[in-house]
Image 1 (cartoon, rainbow, N blue to C red):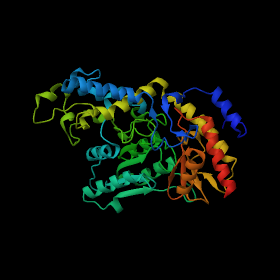
Image 2 (image 1 turned 135 degrees about the horizontal axis):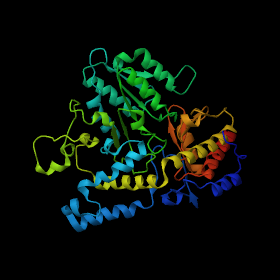
Image 3 (image 1 turned 60 degrees about the vertical axis):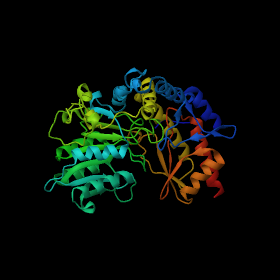
Image 4 (image 1 turned 180 degrees about the horizontal axis):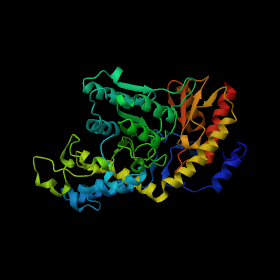
Length: 426
């Protein structure tokens, strides 16, 4: 671990002056607090608004006003093919090939659409493997998929837990389970970065183990896209889905992403739920009654792109292309390491970091267990009294995410100083 200075405000400000690589703070709108700004650590729930977004949305509204329906072909970014503008930058974000990626729908909708194709229980191979602390929406989705196939969710869905006394599920334990019981597993669907603990799983290891067991391997990238470097194609991941309103900063409920490895794109035996945008675009307006298959991830899309919802995603992806995930990951590790070093000085009587210490096993989130203070009350005190926005996750965790695009060392110091003061007064 790098060596950091003693936890003083002056040193935090000095670090901000000397370490600016990857920071675009001036390009984001931070909520106000008093005469200054909020120290914002909730980008893992909702990323901040890019300052350029109002102008970008205004361009789309102006095209609609001036062109009406002709905007589908004549807008400055024609609407009929608007989603194609997102394809390459989204692929770069998750380490995929462009034809393997499509931006569409919302995260859980995409999970269901992809499970409709790739969760095909048969014989003894019926089980779905998730982590015990998976996000509730994922749990609901896989349980409903099992029930849809006439299976008992309590028996079909396997919830892998950490070892006794530990807070994080080890990737090697996932691989060991698949080696021992993989013949009964139809689908592995894990969070690449766990929403609760902030742990980053070894996706390559798990994919290799799942394939060796004969299972389909997929990942929910909600807390990974825009947070950690990904190589989905290289690792051979079968499919993945992610939202874009967290680290990708694309507005509340923004259009989500989906990835399907190219080895599946030519396979006509894979069933799909289809709509107008599933068909080959070269014949789409012939209005044929049957789909003409296309060998891209677009085959899983259904409807024409929602322009006003896609505009923020496109702008955000342009920002990531400009900075690069490698640069952001380096800055993320510096900021998160600094915040961790500050929190360590508090001891563990009140607040304990449960996120893995190894930088390779986490993104920018540090999950802090509160031993003596209700986390809902703690989050409210941080916001109201100190201008620090974190979020609470029951039963006992607050999450602090120093997002490299807009967070600073001084933000980290403010979070530490607030917790120190709260600890001293409790």
